[in-house]
Image (tube, rainbow, N blue to C red; front, side, top):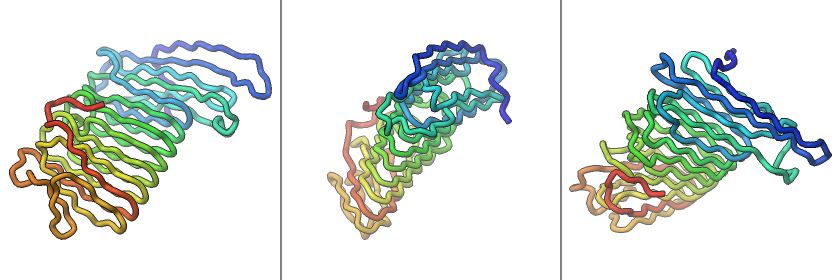
Length: 286
C-alpha cells in the first residue's frame, strides 16, 4: 500500500453552507522537490471534471492542485520510490445528472527525469501537454470524454510506445512525430479519433489502429510517405493523391520519401481520412 506523499503540501479548505443542492468545494495542492530520483512513473485516475497536464519547472518532481466536491470525492496524492498516484476516489452520485459543477485538476511534471505516464479518465475534459519532457512511454484510457494530448515540442528522449484506448470519445493527439515513439497503438470504440503527425520526424513511424464505429482522421506532413494497410469491413477511405494496391493505399511519394508512416488499420464501420499538412519542420499544429 502506498505511503502518503512526503511532499511539501498545502491544504486550503473552503466550506460552503450545506443545502440539498450544495457542493462542499475544497482545494488541495502538493508538490515534491527533485531528489535522487532517476525516473517517475505517473498514474492519473480522474473521473469527472477538467484535467490539465503540463511541463513543470526544473528542480521539482511534480506539482498538483485539485479542486473537488468533498460530498462526492476524496483526493489521492501518493508518492513512493519514483511512483506517483494522483486523482480522485469516490463519485457515487452523478455530478452531471444533478446538473452541478464538476471540479478540476492541474498536474505539472518534471522535465529533469524520464517519465512513464498513465492517464485514465472517464467523463472528463482533458488537455495534456507533454512537449519538451522526457517521455519514455504514455498510455491513455478514456470513457465518454472530449480530450486532447499534445507534444508541442520534441520529446527529449526516445519513446518506447504510445497506447491509446478510447471509449465513446472525441480524442485528438497533436504532434505525434515530436513524441518520437517507436510504436503508436490506438483503439477506438464509438467516436472521433484525430491523430496529428506533425512535428520533428527522427525515424519512420508505425501506427496500429483499431476502430469499431466512428471516424479516424490522420494529419500527415506532405513530404512524408504514407501507406494505409486495411483489414476492415464497411470502412471508407479518403486521401489526396493515393493509389490502391489490393487492399492497401499508397501516397504518391511513398517510394521517394525520406520518412514514412505505415498505418495498420482494422475496423468494422466508419471512415478513414488522410489530410495533408505542411512539410515536417519540428513544429506541431494546434
